[in-house]
Length: 185
Image (spheres, helix red, strand yellow):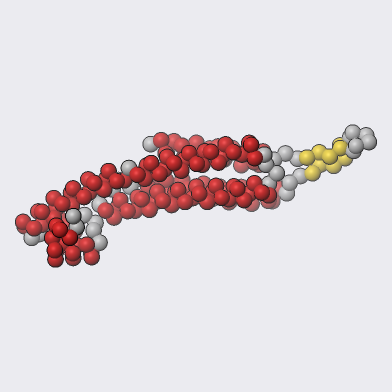
C-alpha cells in the first residue's frame, strides 16, 4: 500500500504548491536614484490559474486511476487485465504531469532547484507504481494454476460452465474446446 500513501502525499504536496501560486513572488522594481519602490511587476494571475487547473485535473485523473485499480481484486483474467489497464493509465498520468511541469518551467519564473523536489517525487511514485503493477504476475500465476485445474476438470466432465467463469475471451474458450490443455499451456 506504499503506492497509495505516496500518491496521497504527492497530491498534498502539489496542492500546497499550487495554493501558493507555485511560490511565484511579485517583483518590486526600485528607482536606482532614490532607492524607492517605483513599480510592482506581477506575473499574470490568469496564467497561473490556467496552469493550476491543468495540474489539478491531471492529479484528479491520476488519483481516479489509482483508486480504481486498487479496488479491483482480480479473480479472472479480464479483471486482471482491467486492473493493469488502470495501473498503466495512472503511470501515464504521472508521465504527462512531469512533461507538463517541464514545459511550465520554461515559462514560469520558478527556481529550478526548488522545483526539483516535485520531479523527484513524481519519479519515485512512478517507480513504486511499477513495482505494484509487477505484483500482478503473482496473481496471473494463481489464475494460470486455476485454469489448468479447470481445463482438466472440463476434459473429464465435458462441462464448459467452469471455463466460462474464468473470464476468458471466446477465442480462447473455442481453442480449449477444440484442442484441450495443450492449446493454452
